[in-house]
Image (cartoon, rainbow, N blue to C red; front, side):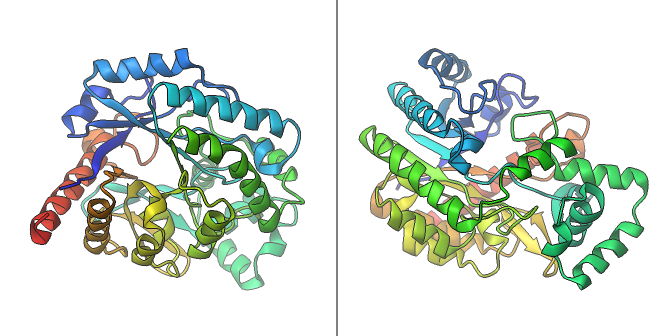
Length: 390
């Protein structure tokens, strides 16, 4: 039987979740990145091997890079973007020489994933990540005061947002501001309003079509290198799968994925199948994505969300949400046993449990919540394998 590789994300030596914790949680693979290297700079063989050795000494394997970040100038096709693409190629080559074959990245402008509440309290007292469109609209129009942001929302949407904001204390407004402008994964420094507004100016003339054109150009340059090295690039879907701050979004739907794969038809040009990001858009059929693009799925983020309304979704238990995880895992098992390829999987955005509240961790990446998700997914996989007699 071909099983999923059990992995967990680690943010490096400064992560308060230690490698021994991850090993004891049952993972065998590590998903990490060299966050200490500035975006766009080359990942040297020496730096890769140094991180690799730390992981090996802990009894684990560096299975997946997440992420080899794409410089903003590549996304905009401006400034020194050609040099940054050349640097990306060198980093891919260096990773290949170190035996690392799966590289995750995203093409979301400026921000990574966005939530308005990092501490939604579940019935059992654990805490989850939540996105509220009214809260985000209030942040965008009335707190950040992004120029012309009011044109992106209807009068009714702005009125609802204002009503939401009227109930917030000053401390709650400050927390909302902090939550939305969370720093990139691996960073402990939040964006400032001045930084965001300046960065947004750079995207003033870039719409979905232009950003997609820039992604396809980038892939046409780097995917052949990855294909030659037998590496697999796995693009992470937009999170949330719709525009925020007026920025373009081009990896949000099944149609987006199809367009990207058809434009650069190399197997190296693949997908990080994130059930949470794709599942937050109710129009996406998660099972059909496996059927249609299974041979291009190179990495799995298995998590779940619940849509409370058209404007609110939140992270849920891994096996209890809008995504039917039983069907998804069954399809993935059948896919792997057909292709004879074991896909790396990690749980994602676990709940914050009381035992971890005193530990400083990146939101969604405390130990116990992810351990719980990993154990549940492992058990689900074993049960389905037994049912299918694999």
